[in-house]
Every structure is written in structure tokens, then in C-alpha cells.
Image: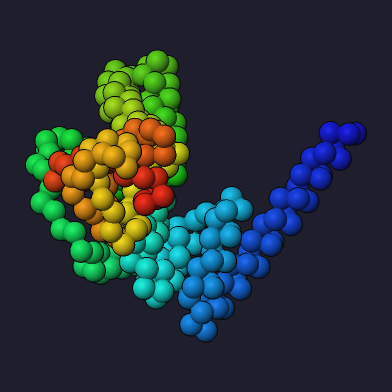
Length: 250
């Protein structure tokens, strides 16, 4: 009986929090329509801080940040949108448009074709889509194995075997992609510079040698963290250390 009360209490709390977040979301949308972009953005951030996120929410935040002349945050939120929904066409278009305002332009270091192709395939779908595809393929795999084991006809046995082999390969690819997307969400390996300009140093301290300068909106690869400093890499291959407050992970 006590468990039932606990479950009921949890459901009521979750429902109330969800309703509150929805109310805040509608309020922020209204403020955005009225041209109160910075106020709307702050409310969107309150929703995120409350533990709720979605591609639509991040997309609205990207729009509000752009209207507030905050290019770095606009790029960050569009990137977060595409992280949750890689097929979001409006976010793709807006990110491409806003990226033109970045100060930094670099020539990317050539990458092995198989590596870049693999990344492109994994990021072509969201974690949810890859997970659903993995489940469907697993069911197909089980059905094919069942046909192979219990069918009396040789043709069906052969068909079941080959379909099972193909299903197994596709299942492994889908599952691996879903895990990779999940890992990228909980442990992001990229970030966006948010400070107008920041000095990249040779070591994680203010006394480190000044290597180069990055500007707002630049995308970097994030590596290890040491005492409030992150080691980052730019697409042209240069590396250095930046303070954690100067960027935010995607």
C-alpha cells in the first residue's frame, strides 16, 4: 500500500513539473513573438536547467540567441538541436547561415575516408532512430533463425540463413551507432567557443604560452580537463588549453 502511495506521489510530482515546464515554454514562445528575445531565451534556459530538453526547444533557443545577437550561443543551440535530431532541416539551414558570421575560418586536416564516412553514417540518425532500427533488425534476426532451424524446405533454410547473416550485420551496425550516439549525448566531445575572443595556451594555466586566439562561435574538439581548463583541438589540427568558462559542450 505504501508503495502505491509513493508511486502516486511521484506521478503527481512529475505531472506537475511537466505542466509547469509546458507553461514556461508557452510563455517563452509568446515573449519571442513579442520581440523579447533575451527574456524568452532565459526562460528556455530555465526549462533546460529543470531537466527538460528537446530538439524543438534547442531550435527555439538558437533562434532567440541569434535575434539577441549572440552568435556563439546561436550556433551552440543549433548544434544541440542537430545532436538530438540530425534531420532537422530548419536547424541545418540556420546553422549554415549563422556560421557565416564566425570570425575564425580554418582549413580542416584531411581525415581517413573510412573514419569520416563512419562518422557521417552514425550521425545521419538520432539515438532513438538507431535504437528502433536495432530492435526491428533483432526481431528480423530471430525470425530468420527460427525459419532456418525449423523449416523443412532447403530453400527456406538457405534463405533464413542468409537473411540471418545480413540481419546480424545490420543489427550490430545499428546497435553500435545507437550506443555511439548515446555516448556522444552524455559525454560530448565537441564544444563551441562562447567568449568574444579567447587566448589558447600551451598549458592549463594563465602562465602558459599564448599559442593562438579563437573567437565566438568556433567549433572545437574537447579532450581532457585539468583544474578548470580543457584541452581542445581545432579542425586545422592545432591544440591548446582554454578555461572551462570560455566554451560550452554541445
